[in-house]
Length: 175
Image (cartoon, rainbow, N blue to C red; front, side, top):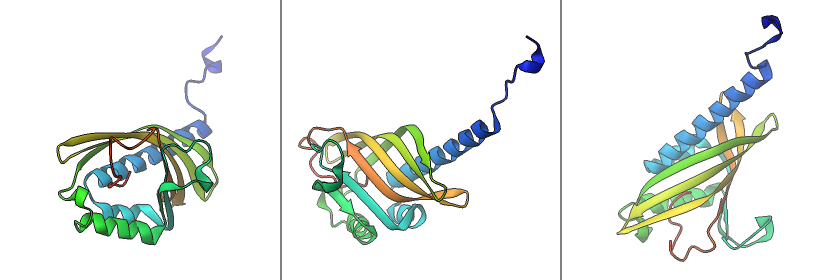
């Protein structure tokens, strides 16, 4: 075999896919940082579409959660209200605010639909406060609207792997 037949460079499509994956991963890492730093208004204004849908199905729902009662099912107005209540100290279990630390992994672009991407990722959110430490483990299913070189979240489905939230109590943070 000659060196002419060995190609060590990735194909153009593979390079483009790796760059897209990197951009999506960096977007998700920035989002995690904004949420961990409690920059919720900035997160809302810069990272979400006007028609955002934020869903967290009940932990005992298996399969498609579309028809099931969920823990959270927010549109843009309801999500903005949730953020204002958290930041204004109206949510007693976030006064004072918890400290959070998010770990995002296994980022995968499931489909590139041109105007938006379907993205899957695993997430672990650690929450500390009020003498407690909680760990939320789950999966993100995101629809990211393509906006120039960046993205905005149009749909955020967080499927928690817990059988119940009894030990955690309320979901008073944005997952």
